Image 1 (tube, rainbow, N blue to C red):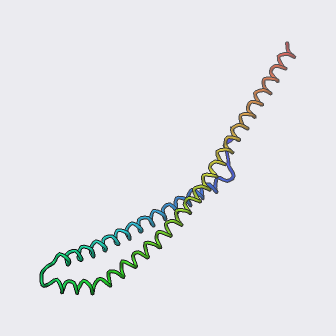
Image 2: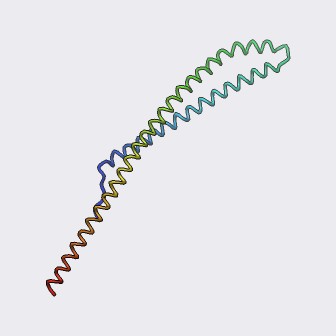
Image 3: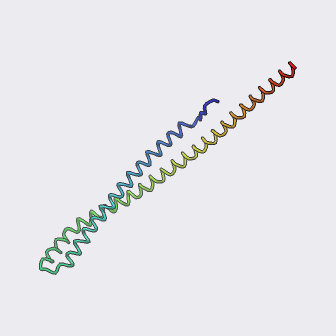
Length: 149
């Protein structure tokens, strides 16, 4: 039996590699997004901790600590705002990349279904041809036996 050859196999291979590449990009975006979220939470916790320490401090140093905190908080608030903007941008890119991965996967799965269908058709056709050949051989051998006998 001849080997099955599908004309669109190269397209399927390219789409599989493309899906893998886009999944890798999506994974990198996910890692970056997680890191930025972790940094944001860490900065917010540090500020909350400092604020709680100042609130609980009843010593005369409290006013100095509070003044220093208020001077520094503007810088930290700006960094937190920038982190939130970065996170929002990364979330948008993440959603877009996830949609790209899904689109490529659907296309690839469609090609895989077409390939499976083409292979099934090929196998059925080969079986039909083999059966026809067997029928022809049987007919010829029967005709020979009849003509000899």
